[in-house]
Image 1 (spheres, rainbow, N blue to C red):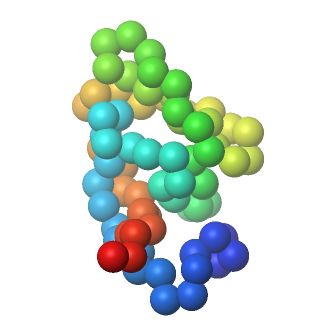
Image 2 (image 1 turned 180 degrees about the horizontal axis):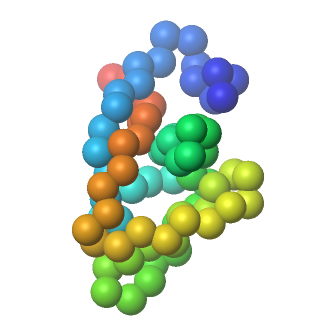
Length: 74
């Protein structure tokens, strides 16, 4: 995953929910770092996350996950 971060890029650990998760976030699931490649909106505010590996994770509005997010330079 180091090839994704340009040299000097800043990263931040943040808490994400179904409303704040974004493409490009890196979420640790089962001890593995999983890169979010796409998101699908589901009923009642839930989202289905498609990881770069092809795996899917469905989260509800109550789900809280810790993610790494690249911060854009100014």
